[in-house]
Structure formats: C-alpha cells, structure tokens
Image (cartoon, rainbow, N blue to C red; front, top):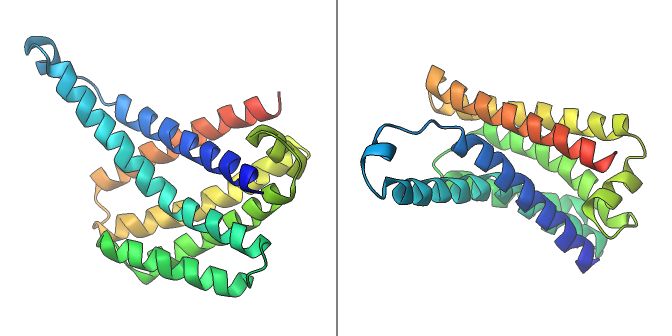
Length: 195
C-alpha cells in the first residue's frame, strides 16, 4: 500500500507542476529580458519560485486527503479522519489569510471526492498511476465523470477565493487561466491513460 501511496503522490506532484508551469511560462517576456544581460537568470529563479509556490498550494489539500485515505484503509474511522482533514484545511486557510466558511465548504466537497478516488486507487491493482486509474475507471467516460465532479468542486473553491479577493477582473483572469490549464492537462492525462 505504501508503494501505491507514492505512485499517487508522485502523479499529483507531477500534475501540479505541469499546471504551474503552464500558467507561469505563458506569461510573456518583457523587453528587459533582451536588454539586460543575465535577466533570464532572474526570470528563471522567479518562475521557479512561482511554480514551487503554486504547486505547494495546489497540493496541500490533496496531500492531506491522500494521507487521510491511507489512514482510513489502515482502519481509522472515516468520519474522524475527515474531521482531522477539515481542521488541517481550516488551519491552512487561516495561515494563508484566506479563511471563509464558503471556501472551507468548497474544499471539503473536493476532499470528499478525492477521498473516494484515492481509496479506490489504493484498492486497485497496478504498478503505475495510469494502471491504477484504468483499473478503477474501466472506461474513459467513467474517469471523465469523476473529473467533471472534481472540476465543479474546484470551481466552487475558485469562486470563494475570488469573493475573498473582491471578485476583481484580475483575480478572475488568474483563476480562469488556472482552470484552462487544469482542463488542458486533464485532457492530456486522459489521452495518455486510455490510449
């Protein structure tokens, strides 16, 4: 089961990194990149930092629920585990100065979907993430159904984040860029898994 844990974790980390790179790298270069010698080094470091930060934010809830799913399969009570995960998410949001009941609720919708998904993956046979997914979701349509439910929960989280930040066009532009990138990466993932 520990091997499956690492397979799932590495897949989530890779996905988060690819989404972050797609968002960060798409930002256009300025004229300074061509005028100032070595500017590309500063840009590389900044983009690397932004990618790492985004990945950490994207992964925190997933790592928390992945650990929770592992605990449930080892025999811990699911409701107690979900309560611990909820408290972890609450404290994390408070530390980011982003706490709201709506945002916590949105994350918990996402957490419940991920919990079921991870438990199913843990119970499946396979030596790779793709094999695990194919053994849980026998058809591409089944997997897409799960991803659509997850995307709806993620949109609720995005709406709560936008609300906290005043619902400005800039925040919505950033959130939409993330949504587009996540959708593109998921389409590519589906193609790789079911090809």
